[in-house]
Length: 293
Image (tube, rainbow, N blue to C red):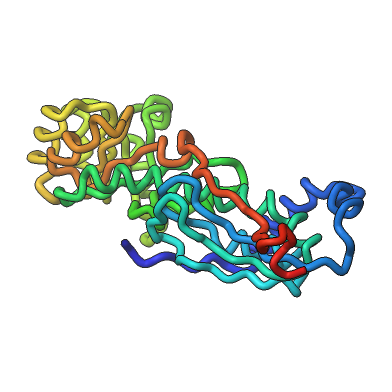
């Protein structure tokens, strides 16, 4: 697994706070307030109900902390770890009301990001025998992009640009309006600073030849079949990063990787990832009482 980026505490705090406010509303957790004494304590366990790759433990921890700092959250695994079905992910101890009120937000973050990490790992394993790496796109859940891209890293993938401001990607519509590949590249080079990477999308070999004449840092080979991709890789000859994209699935990713491309971008890593099934259960003793009561 590649090294994971650090998620800034301020980013965690604001995202979790917004999610808790959405869930607790104006009156708080009325069910828990009505049924659970304020003095009650409990021990709970988050477990994997199916096998998968875990991501989002810091967000889950933050949900419990914001409800009550006295809740103790102990992770049993690290982000990026493969968890077998039935295995413990974390143990939570402390005020029962806080555990119950933070449960859904914690599981929503943890399940969503673990689903992205698990989906990514499936793609990464399919191409492990090649030099290619699978990477994400901007097709992410609004306001969760940084977290979902973090989950891609947890699953063994790589990150593409985070937004419109951190790299240039000239797409087909830019080319159409700018007046062609050469015109678009020349315009970008006169505008962008020397630290900004430039990538351009092409869907035909003739366009690629034009890119090679003008120069770029990377080229996105869009919706090309394996035969065309091999031809493109030979033409590029290591002069720029070769990225394949467009309709990539688990059934096709290996053949694409075997053409010699460097990267394969897959929107499905984030936009189609299924939430990993995780559950939180209060641990009971032999009498049926909470273990902490």
